[in-house]
Image (tube, rainbow, N blue to C red):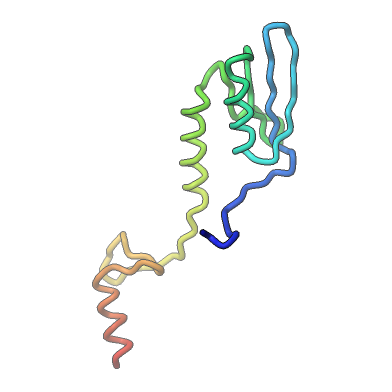
Length: 118
């Protein structure tokens, strides 16, 4: 539907899932994205003692002891959405905080139509 322009977030194997089970076995699974890492965690959460998602710096961003993967995934998606918002700065002459360059308030739309017709 989007003509091949789906947003992607690729990390080229720099996101790692570390799985520790009761026998002391540690597995490190390289993932190409956080979506893939979340899937690995969901598949292994029942059979592992501890699962961690490590970022490209090797720091744990998720730990199954302290967090639920479903809750963490929701928070991760919200944070990703906040970071992806790229809105051009615009000062509305009517001080409308909901007026953006690509989504004008009603007053600015009226002004734009007036300006176009003059």
